[in-house]
Amino acid sequence: MNAADVAGFFADWGALNPEEYLLLDYYLECGGDPRQAAAHFCSEQSTAQWRRQGVDEDLRPRFAAKVVDLQVEATQSEFSYPVDCPAPGPVHTCRVRIAHPHGNFGPRLPNLLSAICGEGTFFSPGIPLVKLLDIHFPATYLAGFEGPRFGVAGLRDLLGVHDRPLFFGVIKPNLGLPPEAFAEAGYQGWLGGLDIAKDDEMLADMDWCPLAERSTLLGAARQRAEARTGQAKIYLANITDEVDRLCDLHDLAVSHGANAVLVNALPVGLSAVRMLRRHARVPLIAHFPLTAALSRLPHYGIHTRVMTRLQRLAGFDAIIMPGFGPRMMTSAAEVLDNVRACLEPLGPIKPSLPVPGGSDWAGTLGEVHRLIGGVDFGFVPGRGVFAHPQGPEAGACSIRQAWEAIARGIPLERQALDHPELAAAIAAFGPLPATEPVSAEEQSPPEDQHPPEEQLILVGAISAGRPTSPGRATHPRRSPGSAMRHGR
Image (cartoon, rainbow, N blue to C red; front, side, top):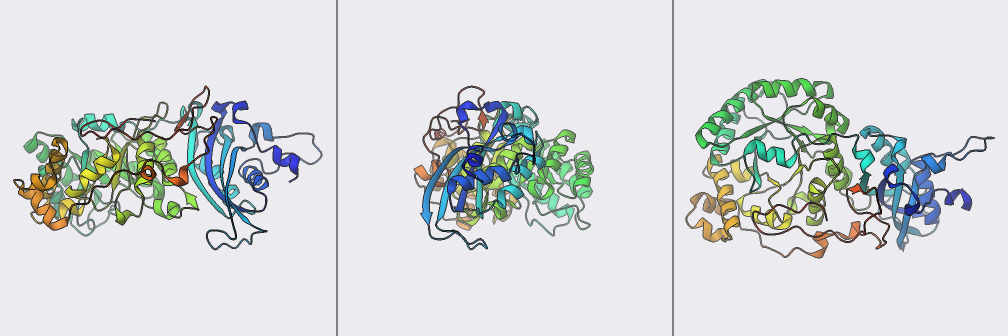
């Protein structure tokens, strides 16, 4: 590729029609000339060869992915991870923003992923380490997707809950219980104050706990709990299975009493989710198997927020994601990136409820609320409810008691003095986590920094007009009971 060839894969963003392109942010490590490597990278994920032999033509203006910004961040002696790709000289670490014409693949998620995360992207010559950091969509592309049917507002309307987080509970033990015992545990959790009792993501339609029987018993238990508490409840049934069974399992679960369904998004595939979204009449909730396998390395793979954006496009009403705390091995900054990806404006696509989870209990609720800065989230303990020493009803009750204290500005230690369920939770699962100020890093992580140039766009949906300034996202409001600000 000579200098003229390289120039054909670079463009001034201001000279392009923003409605015709997705914007993709990548981290790259390359050997050799970064500009030439970036051109190869664009070529491989779009036209590859851009003219036929003996024909005077150039397919790049319409079909080529184009570099609109390239920043060389550092030079180092070797790649960040051992790879079978000797570097011809120094290794350059780069941030590149690419405008990719969405007419190459259309509003089809398998074809989109084949272009931006496929062979051309991860097997581009001289670039063994690649991480897709973010993706931004124009209105013309978003118009091809339905997105969530219910979204945050619809879930709240179903439950009649509008001024606090939604309280989920993962019924435990997650595997091994017969349907009767499983249903009783869910019932106790609902009585204590859970809004949603859910199957674990690993619990399938098994002969020792069949979905039909489980849904029948949980559906009946849900109705009893609604009658006793006067509050709407949801049973979230896991229908993850082979793709050709998804619609049938949805119908089976719903007809027997489930009023929402859980799907492990990446194992079944986002196209399968999109198919199910068109069929389903109850909320669809995503879980995150495979996410860490694709995202954990800081310099390789796909950032979790990209997967969250795509799950929202596919139609999930709520997205369970790796949450805060050391067990999930995910920085607070990255969790907040995913919360924003659920809630920020995305053209006509409704917001999805973010549900960050991982070893939560009554004592961690305040920190989750503080970090998110509002009430538009789901809180999803497992052991924190179902391993409570006084039983699941008391475990769920401790969550509600903790929220009451948070909303009133009362320290949990003081609330526990006359709330024995909360006191027992603190004794069993404590100590209470220390409260730390939200750092600048948590609000905007270093790996996602972009050059302060006016032509760059840092919002989920691209305006048809002049691109906005990329300034930092503002942190959401922090007052209890307030809604998280959508957007920047």
